[in-house]
Image (cartoon, rainbow over all chains, first blue to last red; front, top):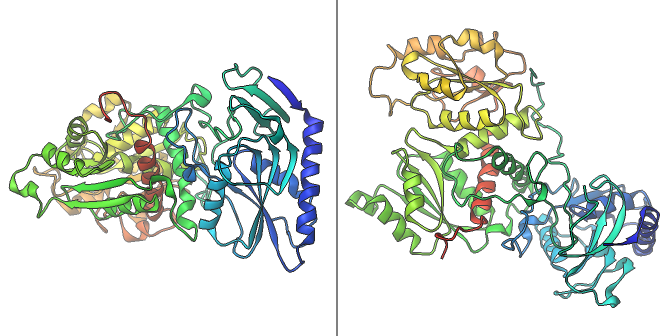
Length: 188
Length: 357
């Protein structure tokens, strides 16, 4: 297990991401309202932290979280069972510009599921994809607009897992990389 | 003892606390807290036959999953693709309106295809056995059969005869697991028990306990989650053996009522009562009917439930059934979420060696 970023570095990565997003939503005319939607169960935490760092114009603090379990295409894979959680988007997404937030982008399958789920909730005007880490390994034609830490040129193998830990879901903020078969020391 | 606050039905939408075990792009979330073994939990049951055979962990996981399904019914597109391409069959040998409709709607919200088999007018009336009927339906390539039958144990028999998942939608006087689950889910939501722990909660189940599969399923589930269960009814409809399971038995509704946080009124099942269990309907209503007058004895925030169909004026008065304490319609709405969770979990359960080919 290797530490890629500690608490301070994670905070500055989230600030970088906020800056990149602000560049885009800043370009949108004020008449175009936008919202943050995070993918459970870490993207939603990042989204709520981003909300405090972004300009309020045409935003109004709209933050939602999306559960994509029911839209996944790998439900039959062996492993601990994903819990179906609530999707909590307390606003109408029709006509909104959506900033879709996730922690780590790899295959792109979560994002595909999230997009389908969003389309079932309404018709957003456009969707940006913002991720904390792009670790490469895409299996679908999906590209992020905003990336805080780009590792896609490092040719990480499938066994190397990039993991984001964030409070309050975890006991601390950190960005880690570890082998899939490595014992998960330090995790509570 | 926690008295439920009125209006606590709209509990916080926190669901379950986040769990450890998150690996990026692999496993988005893991088992809820209160489940042993942390993130390694997997729903193990290919069939849902009874609550008796479920563990505490199974019940909590299922209810937590139902919570996630609740919001599907409130969105503009009331459909998720979780069971796309799967076929669910309703095989009902006994009359049912709401259970059948609820299962059909739950399956269609999960994007499954639904096939309805009614016993009347089918080959069952021509003398085909239950197992043969099920095998023939299965040969058409179905993934789950929802079965209701007038004989206790029918669902177990089917589970042994076919390879697909069997969901018991009521078998004779044995169990009605999805009704039990939705009753328990309704209680947890109403009392704000987000971890699905019912310690310190007293539930009175009133009426025809002997013939009620709803009572049996409720009993098993409630006791496992830590609730205190009082069974109330005339001695003729109150089997003494239930005391051995840990239930309290009572013939005096007026004495049990003030202690209850939840009252579950059962329907008098005239179709199953063959002996003279009570002298007259009027006498039964007098002693065991939940009237507005009797409600004055209850805790102010008590939750009143009924599995339906309601015999108004017999086991429950209209003023109570439609009153502020009633959770009867919430039960129906919650039934949909619970049945979606059941269909989703059993069809995604790992298949054991001797079953799925």
